[in-house]
Image (cartoon, rainbow, N blue to C red):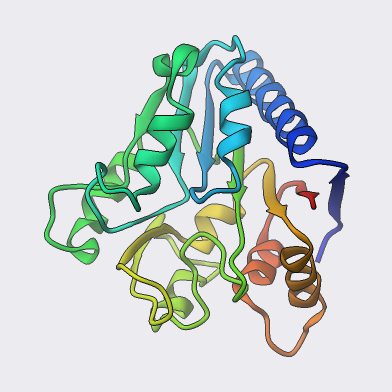
Length: 232
Protein backbone atom coordinates (compact mmCIF):
# COMPACT_ATOMS: atom_id res chain seq x y z
CA UNK A 1 0.00 0.00 0.00
CA UNK A 2 1.28 3.45 -0.89
CA UNK A 3 2.06 5.90 1.89
CA UNK A 4 -0.77 7.35 3.94
CA UNK A 5 -0.13 10.96 4.98
CA UNK A 6 -1.12 11.42 8.62
CA UNK A 7 -2.12 14.92 9.82
CA UNK A 8 -2.53 15.30 13.60
CA UNK A 9 -4.09 18.34 15.30
CA UNK A 10 -4.22 19.60 18.88
CA UNK A 11 -7.98 20.07 18.79
CA UNK A 12 -10.97 19.14 16.71
CA UNK A 13 -11.55 22.81 15.93
CA UNK A 14 -8.04 23.09 14.48
CA UNK A 15 -8.67 19.92 12.47
CA UNK A 16 -11.98 21.24 11.12
CA UNK A 17 -10.44 24.55 10.05
CA UNK A 18 -7.39 23.00 8.40
CA UNK A 19 -9.29 20.24 6.64
CA UNK A 20 -11.87 22.71 5.31
CA UNK A 21 -9.04 24.84 3.94
CA UNK A 22 -7.42 21.81 2.28
CA UNK A 23 -10.71 20.74 0.71
CA UNK A 24 -11.42 24.28 -0.47
CA UNK A 25 -7.94 24.60 -1.99
CA UNK A 26 -8.30 21.28 -3.84
CA UNK A 27 -11.65 22.36 -5.26
CA UNK A 28 -10.22 25.70 -6.36
CA UNK A 29 -7.37 23.94 -8.17
CA UNK A 30 -9.83 21.60 -9.89
CA UNK A 31 -11.95 24.52 -11.08
CA UNK A 32 -8.88 26.36 -12.36
CA UNK A 33 -7.60 23.29 -14.21
CA UNK A 34 -10.81 21.69 -15.47
CA UNK A 35 -13.57 24.27 -15.07
CA UNK A 36 -15.45 22.28 -12.43
CA UNK A 37 -14.92 20.29 -9.25
CA UNK A 38 -16.54 17.36 -7.46
CA UNK A 39 -16.73 16.50 -3.78
CA UNK A 40 -18.11 13.39 -2.04
CA UNK A 41 -18.68 13.64 1.71
CA UNK A 42 -19.67 11.36 4.56
CA UNK A 43 -22.28 11.81 7.26
CA UNK A 44 -22.21 11.29 11.02
CA UNK A 45 -21.16 13.68 13.77
CA UNK A 46 -17.47 13.90 12.90
CA UNK A 47 -17.66 16.17 9.80
CA UNK A 48 -20.19 18.68 11.13
CA UNK A 49 -17.61 21.22 12.30
CA UNK A 50 -15.65 20.89 9.09
CA UNK A 51 -18.84 21.43 7.05
CA UNK A 52 -19.52 24.60 9.00
CA UNK A 53 -16.02 25.87 8.19
CA UNK A 54 -16.20 24.86 4.53
CA UNK A 55 -19.53 26.60 3.91
CA UNK A 56 -17.93 29.95 4.79
CA UNK A 57 -15.45 29.75 1.92
CA UNK A 58 -16.00 31.93 -1.11
CA UNK A 59 -15.38 29.43 -3.88
CA UNK A 60 -17.08 29.29 -7.26
CA UNK A 61 -19.63 26.95 -5.75
CA UNK A 62 -21.79 27.00 -8.87
CA UNK A 63 -19.00 24.99 -10.52
CA UNK A 64 -18.89 22.38 -7.74
CA UNK A 65 -20.78 19.07 -7.63
CA UNK A 66 -21.43 17.53 -4.23
CA UNK A 67 -22.76 14.11 -3.31
CA UNK A 68 -22.61 11.64 -0.44
CA UNK A 69 -20.31 8.66 -0.06
CA UNK A 70 -23.26 6.73 1.38
CA UNK A 71 -26.63 7.16 3.02
CA UNK A 72 -29.17 5.21 5.01
CA UNK A 73 -32.26 4.20 3.06
CA UNK A 74 -34.56 6.65 4.85
CA UNK A 75 -36.33 9.75 3.51
CA UNK A 76 -34.08 12.82 3.25
CA UNK A 77 -36.17 14.46 5.97
CA UNK A 78 -35.44 11.62 8.44
CA UNK A 79 -33.26 12.49 11.43
CA UNK A 80 -30.88 9.61 10.53
CA UNK A 81 -30.43 10.76 6.93
CA UNK A 82 -26.93 11.83 5.91
CA UNK A 83 -28.53 14.04 3.28
CA UNK A 84 -30.42 15.95 5.97
CA UNK A 85 -27.17 16.46 7.89
CA UNK A 86 -25.40 17.77 4.78
CA UNK A 87 -28.29 20.09 3.94
CA UNK A 88 -28.37 21.47 7.49
CA UNK A 89 -24.63 21.97 7.95
CA UNK A 90 -22.96 22.28 4.52
CA UNK A 91 -25.43 23.35 1.82
CA UNK A 92 -25.90 26.83 3.30
CA UNK A 93 -24.85 30.36 2.37
CA UNK A 94 -22.36 30.29 -0.54
CA UNK A 95 -22.61 26.51 -0.90
CA UNK A 96 -26.29 26.71 -1.86
CA UNK A 97 -25.06 27.42 -5.39
CA UNK A 98 -23.40 23.98 -5.65
CA UNK A 99 -25.00 21.09 -7.55
CA UNK A 100 -26.07 18.51 -4.97
CA UNK A 101 -26.79 14.95 -6.11
CA UNK A 102 -28.95 12.93 -3.71
CA UNK A 103 -28.52 9.20 -3.14
CA UNK A 104 -32.23 8.82 -2.40
CA UNK A 105 -35.07 8.17 -4.82
CA UNK A 106 -38.75 7.32 -4.59
CA UNK A 107 -38.00 3.61 -5.03
CA UNK A 108 -39.30 1.16 -2.47
CA UNK A 109 -35.84 -0.19 -1.64
CA UNK A 110 -32.18 0.65 -2.02
CA UNK A 111 -31.81 -2.25 -4.44
CA UNK A 112 -34.54 -0.84 -6.66
CA UNK A 113 -32.87 2.58 -6.69
CA UNK A 114 -29.39 1.55 -7.82
CA UNK A 115 -29.93 2.07 -11.57
CA UNK A 116 -31.40 5.56 -11.13
CA UNK A 117 -28.64 6.64 -8.76
CA UNK A 118 -25.98 5.27 -11.11
CA UNK A 119 -27.47 7.46 -13.86
CA UNK A 120 -27.49 10.53 -11.60
CA UNK A 121 -23.85 10.07 -10.69
CA UNK A 122 -22.88 10.06 -14.34
CA UNK A 123 -23.61 13.80 -14.36
CA UNK A 124 -20.89 14.43 -11.75
CA UNK A 125 -17.37 15.15 -13.03
CA UNK A 126 -15.35 12.10 -12.06
CA UNK A 127 -13.09 10.91 -10.64
CA UNK A 128 -14.02 12.90 -7.55
CA UNK A 129 -11.56 15.68 -6.86
CA UNK A 130 -11.96 15.17 -3.12
CA UNK A 131 -13.64 12.27 -1.34
CA UNK A 132 -13.94 12.28 2.45
CA UNK A 133 -14.46 9.07 4.40
CA UNK A 134 -15.19 8.31 8.02
CA UNK A 135 -14.70 4.99 9.78
CA UNK A 136 -16.76 2.93 12.20
CA UNK A 137 -15.44 0.96 15.16
CA UNK A 138 -15.83 -2.25 13.14
CA UNK A 139 -13.53 -0.89 10.44
CA UNK A 140 -16.32 -0.08 7.99
CA UNK A 141 -16.09 2.96 5.79
CA UNK A 142 -18.79 4.41 3.54
CA UNK A 143 -21.38 1.63 3.98
CA UNK A 144 -18.88 -1.12 3.25
CA UNK A 145 -19.60 -3.17 6.37
CA UNK A 146 -17.60 -6.29 7.27
CA UNK A 147 -20.86 -8.00 8.24
CA UNK A 148 -22.74 -7.28 4.99
CA UNK A 149 -23.38 -10.13 2.57
CA UNK A 150 -22.88 -7.63 -0.26
CA UNK A 151 -19.34 -6.70 0.87
CA UNK A 152 -17.41 -8.66 -1.75
CA UNK A 153 -19.51 -7.21 -4.58
CA UNK A 154 -19.27 -3.70 -3.12
CA UNK A 155 -15.51 -4.00 -2.52
CA UNK A 156 -14.53 -5.59 -5.83
CA UNK A 157 -11.63 -3.42 -7.08
CA UNK A 158 -12.55 -4.00 -10.74
CA UNK A 159 -16.27 -3.28 -10.38
CA UNK A 160 -17.87 -1.12 -13.05
CA UNK A 161 -20.65 -0.08 -10.63
CA UNK A 162 -20.55 3.27 -8.86
CA UNK A 163 -23.11 2.40 -6.19
CA UNK A 164 -24.47 -0.66 -4.46
CA UNK A 165 -27.25 -1.47 -1.99
CA UNK A 166 -25.96 -2.82 1.33
CA UNK A 167 -27.81 -4.48 4.20
CA UNK A 168 -25.58 -4.55 7.31
CA UNK A 169 -26.57 -6.94 10.07
CA UNK A 170 -24.90 -4.85 12.79
CA UNK A 171 -26.38 -1.44 11.96
CA UNK A 172 -29.90 -0.15 11.36
CA UNK A 173 -31.36 0.50 7.93
CA UNK A 174 -30.49 -0.64 4.47
CA UNK A 175 -27.87 1.56 2.84
CA UNK A 176 -26.84 2.92 -0.53
CA UNK A 177 -23.08 3.31 -0.90
CA UNK A 178 -20.39 4.17 -3.38
CA UNK A 179 -18.43 1.06 -4.30
CA UNK A 180 -14.79 0.61 -3.40
CA UNK A 181 -13.91 0.98 -7.09
CA UNK A 182 -15.62 4.40 -7.30
CA UNK A 183 -14.03 5.58 -4.06
CA UNK A 184 -10.56 4.40 -5.05
CA UNK A 185 -10.50 6.57 -8.18
CA UNK A 186 -10.68 9.85 -6.20
CA UNK A 187 -7.94 12.33 -6.96
CA UNK A 188 -7.60 13.07 -3.24
CA UNK A 189 -8.85 10.63 -0.60
CA UNK A 190 -9.30 11.83 2.97
CA UNK A 191 -10.10 9.80 6.09
CA UNK A 192 -11.48 12.06 8.83
CA UNK A 193 -11.15 10.61 12.34
CA UNK A 194 -11.49 11.83 15.91
CA UNK A 195 -10.75 10.21 19.26
CA UNK A 196 -8.07 7.83 20.54
CA UNK A 197 -10.21 4.72 20.04
CA UNK A 198 -10.81 5.44 16.35
CA UNK A 199 -7.09 6.02 15.82
CA UNK A 200 -6.25 2.71 17.47
CA UNK A 201 -8.82 0.87 15.38
CA UNK A 202 -7.53 2.54 12.23
CA UNK A 203 -3.91 1.61 12.96
CA UNK A 204 -4.87 -1.96 13.84
CA UNK A 205 -6.89 -2.26 10.63
CA UNK A 206 -3.92 -1.20 8.51
CA UNK A 207 -1.55 -3.52 10.39
CA UNK A 208 -3.77 -6.61 10.11
CA UNK A 209 -2.65 -8.25 6.87
CA UNK A 210 -4.64 -11.45 7.44
CA UNK A 211 -8.04 -9.77 7.71
CA UNK A 212 -8.32 -6.70 5.52
CA UNK A 213 -11.15 -4.61 6.96
CA UNK A 214 -13.00 -2.30 4.55
CA UNK A 215 -11.05 0.82 5.55
CA UNK A 216 -7.76 -0.95 4.78
CA UNK A 217 -9.10 -2.39 1.54
CA UNK A 218 -10.12 1.05 0.34
CA UNK A 219 -6.71 2.50 1.13
CA UNK A 220 -5.03 -0.47 -0.55
CA UNK A 221 -6.97 0.27 -3.74
CA UNK A 222 -6.80 4.09 -3.70
CA UNK A 223 -5.03 5.55 -6.72
CA UNK A 224 -4.47 9.14 -5.61
CA UNK A 225 -2.88 10.70 -2.52
CA UNK A 226 -4.26 9.35 0.77
CA UNK A 227 -4.58 11.54 3.82
CA UNK A 228 -5.75 10.93 7.39
CA UNK A 229 -6.84 13.93 9.44
CA UNK A 230 -7.07 13.20 13.17
CA UNK A 231 -7.56 14.98 16.48
CA UNK A 232 -8.34 13.72 19.94
